[in-house]
Length: 187
Image (tube, rainbow, N blue to C red; front, side, top):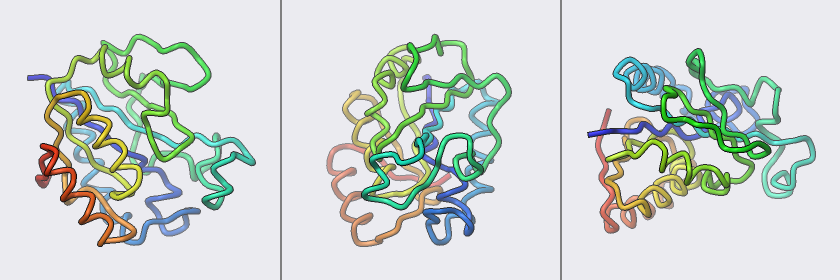
């Protein structure tokens, strides 16, 4: 069974108190996420990490304060990126990721599936199931979860490796997710 780990937006601007869009308490997840990422890579399981990759004056900054501007400190992951990671950029053809361990998928909206290459990346990896974690539960994680459910493969969200901004919205999203066949477990 081929499992793909899916690390959503665990970037400094979201995960650490000095970040531009800090999610309160997210820094407590960093050791768990680092352990999950390391486990995936050491076991030969592909790791997809989504990353906001905004340009200065990005249109998203009309809705959210500036954050994760490309090449700035806040855009970096809060956990290590594996040597030889392959980046799936918005502005370049989709690379061959079949042999990649760590795959960085750039995005400029709250939905990772707006990267036009993500569907091809998933097809290349031919996963049997997905394990999802990161931030923000009811925003970017939600979009990843429901997008992955559309693949028809089992999707598990790790409840002790996600963090929400609005607990009521997160609970409502989780109820919908499990009603559609998603699983919730802990790492």
